[in-house]
Length: 321
Image (cartoon, rainbow, N blue to C red; front, side, top):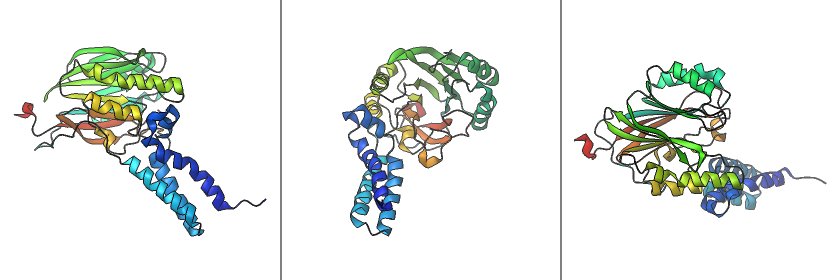
């Protein structure tokens, strides 16, 4: 039996069509929420399929792929539902530069590469997840300019460590979703004023149980932020993209704007080329703060790229006066 190549293209485009629609119905089922991570890849795949089918004069499937690709593109750039971004400040002097690194448990042999990435960006605050005792030993020795620390290493996947150039107040590990997936909550006395920090590593998705754990952790973010000052930054490995239902629900409830999630800053998997990566590491802010610049650093052996962000305070914030 002969198989037409264009029929194979149509069959291969079907999963991409599912990923195109999934962000709009992600709350219906955990499997749809997982598929909703990939609208960018769906856009590219469906565009390529539409071009190939048009070249073969298969007009109906070509039009269907083009329409589905448009739906995927709309999902990719759909505005996030969080707090309104504040007005830009009259000067671009940052109030804080932050770094988020999922260092990968067992990857401590590459600590020098991770520390080199931090040294190049010169952040004020560094948060690391998947921190084991071996990782903590290397980070503690390699970050002498960050004397203010809150650490909770773990032999599993949920160790965490916060390092700061500026003094930390009320720095503590708090449960997020469950006691085994803690976040670090602190107030950093930055030169531009006190800023609340919540550093997170939420559970990864993959099946119904994991999806429920992730949803609980994201739903706990608003309560975890409650003791912090109004100017807040939430950063870390969320294991959720801007298109996942739990992430989009969490933003307005926590009073956060999209921060780095407003742009495509894909961080995982680090070894894949840009079009195949997804953004699951984020830096989010509450007004009067906003992320002015978010960028990834070089790979250092982890499955995540490091994420760096420059944070500014809005022009109409009373603390500027």
